[in-house]
Length: 110
Image (cartoon, rainbow, N blue to C red; front, side, top):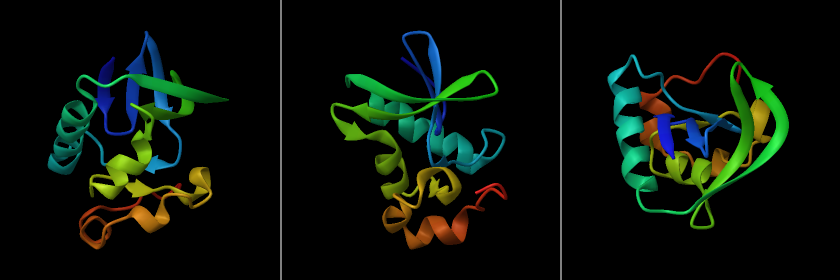
């Protein structure tokens, strides 16, 4: 398993974009912090993804779980990403932290 950034991981050679997760880009300090958090969070855990059948760029889209816990929910609840309601249907909105809402800029497409 490899972490590209806080909303894309590579599982068994397959790049997976976490559905409904809006994480900051790696070119920003917030993006590098989010990636670091994700690497530490996933270390040693069993990862399973349920793909939606959609693709974006070179990635498949899916909901992934670390030891049974939704990774998207975890990264948002930890304050390193925001909900992207356009793709999540708002399922992560209640998990957003107020600090993340004030610190991170939501992507225009969300």
